[in-house]
Length: 212
Image (tube, rainbow, N blue to C red; front, side):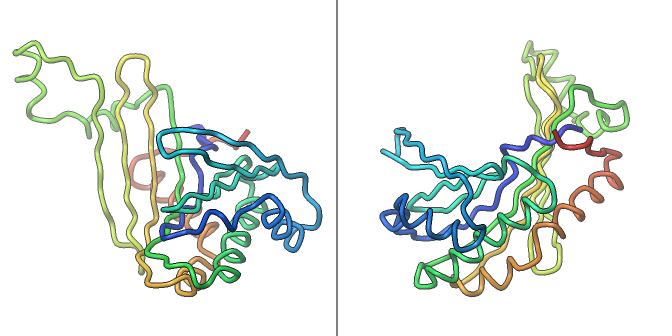
């Protein structure tokens, strides 16, 4: 399977004061952690109003009122560790921010689905739907599994017309404050990457190709 790099991220849900995340403040945080990386600043407007995004060669930072997202551009181990370091640093610096949960997310896709895997998507109502002229365009399997003190939410979506098989892994933690989130996140990103890929291989026979 190919990694969908833009959907690999760390998301921290809470009540964020987005006004703090000015270009000057964000630049200072990146400088403190990584020296002087190049930082791109972009502004977008959608149904939530104007938003700012900060990008480096390795990841993008999306501060929103309901959540802070650090989305990957590269998924080598060093880049993933640096993304975790940045989130932990922001949680420590803005420790007064009310935080309710965080998640570590991975996504992959494949153009084909093996016969063994296809059998998971054969549901009892398939024949009845076809008999009544209903055509299924997408089918998802969702599971929630206990993994230590986290919940692993797994979503597998079967290909419809010209759509690839997609897999999304979300390692979810409920927390009560920024400090608990920072402690719980420590060392988790690479651990969850390894655990998630091993899970997909052992349970579904899916393996990831080298990242681009």
